Image (cartoon, rainbow, N blue to C red; front, side, top):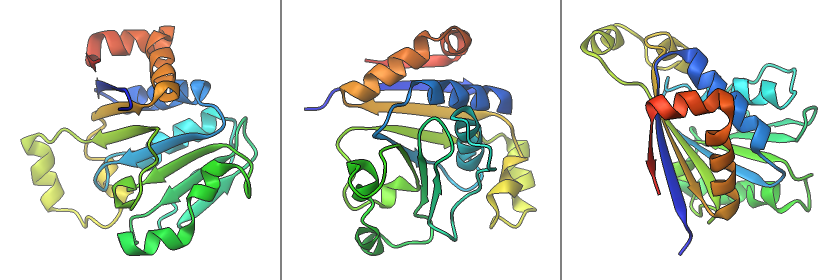
Length: 197
């Protein structure tokens, strides 16, 4: 059985969420697989923008909802940003996503998959990041008045995020451990995180 480590962080503003993404980018290596989960507006694209910037990618990262896969090769590591939102699980095997983490047809880099719960077969070792917006009664009232088709519209409702980081496999546990030990992150983790070992 593969070992799993879970950390929960309450990020009370967007800067904390971006700081976590920025720090995480310092510890990923070639072959890293990140599975991103969260409802529309939970901040998956914002997280990836900070993550990509920290990797040295100057191109603005956008949600690849319509393109399905965006490849960024200019940073410290290649970043393959995949969005499965518009696909049915039965359509996903035809994308041959495993080629991105095999390193045979594409240079090994970081594979980040949004809406990863749609994957028919989840890689056994990975880092899962689940972002959610803590809903206050004010947020719920504002949500009723919005067209919920655009993630960016929802992200302005609340800057606070609940971030679950789940490392499965030794390599990913090492990444999460390094992230938690980092001085800039340690303060956030110490005051906001719950560890489940």
